[in-house]
Length: 616
Ligand code: FES
Image 1 (tube, rainbow, N blue to C red):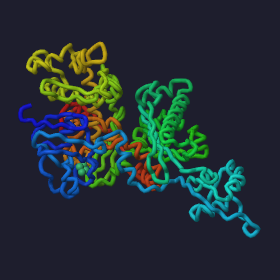
Image 2 (cartoon, rainbow, N blue to C red; image 1 turned 90 degrees about the horizontal axis):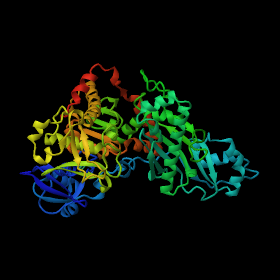
Image 3 (tube, rainbow, N blue to C red; image 1 turned 90 degrees about the vertical axis):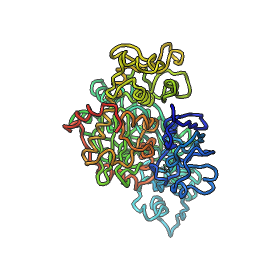
Image 4 (spheres, protein in one colour; image 1 turned 180 degrees about the vertical axis):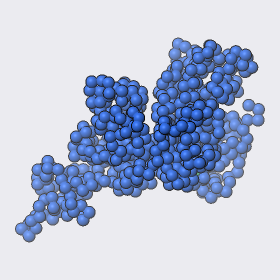
């Protein structure tokens, strides 16, 4: 650690030892604190602010001076993407500068979209019928709703109730329309607000956001594991279950609708909203998840040449689908691009404004399937790559989901390694972000080489004793002890085996090969990228230093590698809040050039090359 400078981050007390001139954002990442950098370090967004006292940082540069007020500068506020560490320092990180799963929903991308919902709520004051005004009830309401709704329609069951409801309200009702369809009418105060729900059906987790449609604000969230996981962690096993089990498709469909209802109910509960006041639901998910939700057979999605039943946006009745919101509500499923590139990818492209980026920008949604999106400046390319479940902690000896007790961050210390667990609980396993960190640190320490091979006994003897003593076993069972029995919450040490390292190599190689294919397709080099956007919960929590170290993503300055939270879910929220965003999503799905990796002769070769752990 000679020549390294100590930087401590509050309020958590995380510490990193860094080289002089390290950017604050990079030092924070080394300490395990991920900061937001939405503008990629251009000093435009101001969301990477930190506060410091003393003289451990470089003086404010011209970008900081022009974007921070004099008052802020006097208080020690700095931009972590510009300030560099030159001496021992203590830095406080405001809560708003940290990355959280819902960062994207809380901090502006969605808030920046003017509300223009398909669902409208109107308080009417209608003229009462008279011998001189014998208009029918529906025509009277239509006139009250304004010229834009001249062709207003209504369901028969609502028409049957209309006369009484109108008169009970003394012709001053509250009406709700979806598009040009009248779907609800109640007395004054009967519908205080109209709400919608945006749902992201992930292979692993399903998330719902309740949105107050007049403002476009998210007011409640709910999430739960996808119960289809009981039939297999990945999409292919679900399709096999649908194919090979009696009523398999129906079971998966019912599970999907059931979990959507559960997360909507949870989100409504959090916001104290009645599901009856939710009139529209927008849905994103990979193509297979969307098919199962709709009860469409995904058989041909999963087999070459991977043909979905439908790729256009779909509008269906909530009641027909069994979605428990207002019985006259609608469900709008965003379009997919191809069999393996779904509406969730469209959601990411929409919410990150990828196609409006100034320079070449890459977006990656890392999961069991990794979706890679590249905006070259002229073309939008997308592909899907089978990363396998290692990032979810599956098929790893002590792997687990990101839950209490999972090792989620590993860092080097003066005499070895240290780890952090979720919830500061005793370590019971290692999740994807911890796995990535552990392998990066093992590379740094020389425990594995760039081919992923763990040192043999002779090699281990060359390492510091504190590290060498953690290496044991033979061949595929050769392993590195991350948590000793004393540090572990189990009756055994938590280890990372040679086999685990290989699993991570396969996952990382698949994602990186997908990136390289898209870059090759546009003639760009990794260094030409201006920004890399990491979407999804995993992308938001991984340590960017480690992701670059193992070569999962191209090597860019850290501030240009940006975690964008649940961007797919944010896309569903935007499509709910604004009909123009909905149209934009359809245009993006049509404009995206899908690259089918399995048909690319160079994919296998690139995959072999990118399995190496090297940054670049
Ligand atoms: S000001 Fe935007 S990342 Fe620093």
